[in-house]
Image (tube, rainbow, N blue to C red):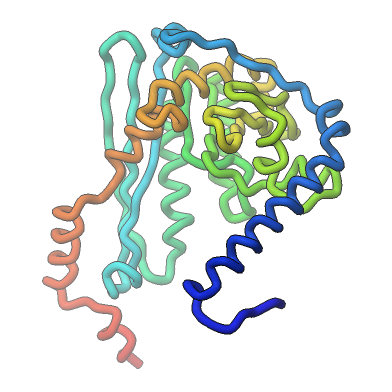
Length: 290
């Protein structure tokens, strides 16, 4: 491992040089497999105009969920936490919309992130009605402890024929790269060969995944249940339309709104803290119990 005398500020020039060499190494690796990669990929491009996204979304009922949390230790120093999930729905072009909330309290010995994930998935599953398009902020290909919740959602999605989409803004997956013997992120591998508003074919078996360039930097990753594979073109068009409707034009509008409403504001945090303190509970006190 290389190290340098001095602070980071004293070594900024060396850092810039390191970064330059790192990017060059990745580019060399990408170039080596570019021809094979292009033969392997099927890349389609969506032609859009100023109101294209409005036409695609017109009349569709779209639902998104997102959650926020107060950690038992880091934020409060007490053995209790909370998860708040917001569910937003809108019928595009019809002036119909609404929101609702779900909240759960989490003990210190429980897995806060798992509880949040389960609540988000369960809240979204309630909207599987055969006519809505459901957006989840994150992937559907998950670690073992999360698979039960996702499995239930996927089964109900197929039973009700309700599209379920996982959107990953910054993907660190290496599924495609590993097929070509590379240890780089798929998003880095694809960024040099995909044009704006282009997307790949679906990969995967039980859960499909594909990449799309919704902004000029790195492609995003889209995941959905395998029963939707024949809907791939429509899925990618709906995802792109939602992104173009959003403020940044690079993130789905419905997830933007869900994130906005899910945030636990300062007033709610203060009330939560006051309620806990009123019972004299603190992690410091609990740690002294033998």
